[in-house]
Image 1 (cartoon, rainbow over the protein chains, first blue to last red):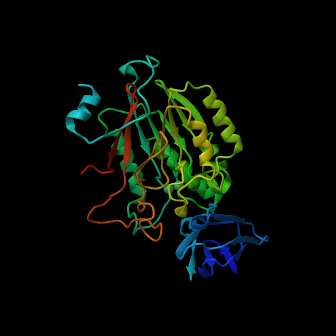
Image 2: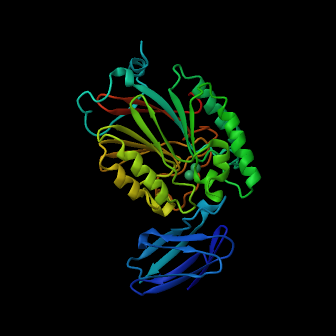
Image 3: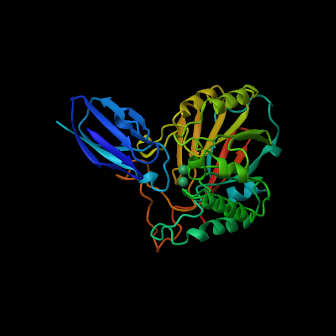
Length: 88
Length: 293
Ligand SMILES: [Cu+2]
Ligand SMILES: [Fe+2]
């Protein structure tokens, strides 16, 4: 599943995952180094422009979980979040 | 009447936090060691957002006037970061920092300490901040208390970093185990709420270095609200902002600023006095508003 990170959004904003099914999220950054951090699943990655970052994990709980950019990227950084929806 | 008695009599509602054990036998001095300092935080000079703070350019001057009007002046004043609001433009960043510095010079108290927040320092690794304010981390002693200002913001990924951790380790090795230590930081050193980036990537390593010391307290900012927490015996007290309040950790789906309430202007904003008491070791925190009710 591919997600693009740019100032100050992730596109798409939401992705739907299946509980217990391993997933690979592939992030690309368009302008500056961004972060992907999903504390609820204990996964994070740096997203460097030109180098897609792949994050592998298996969602182990149901619900909606916000992830965030944890690399300060400017005025709007605090709003830069995305949503992982985990369904059965 | 001395100041402490005044605070008690007037019932201003200071909160006392006793840190660790009572102090070791006569290691530190008498009541002469008692003093207080003022912490201001997250002033975000240059921020614009009328729905959030229609008096963005007036709030800091009002807070400075409030500190100047204190009946007793503190021993020193410290700003714990996010002095300015971030900008991508290096010239504008310097302009905001310089304006902030000039405003802070309006404090009648000449003993002012500064620290960067990620808004000041993360986009250029602290370069502009250092030009105007000097080192981003440092230590100093005041009346028997050892203060350590840590920089967990210049690194865009919110790391203190190996080099600074090495410096911290070397600094702590010179301290006695029961010495009074106050750590100043911008971001929380413990993972308060990582979902909102309220954490420090390698904060755990700093806390490990601090753990053997019995009297350690951390004062920080970043989360734009008062918050009190303990990791082991180490206390962590965050300060209010002087630009906009943020919701309690995880209380809202998003970390959006709390809107300005015309019926209660400056609500949720403020600064604090911290009185350091030597025996037993305690920090009396009094939260003060921008505008007196
Ligand atoms: Cu901050
Ligand atoms: Fe801030």
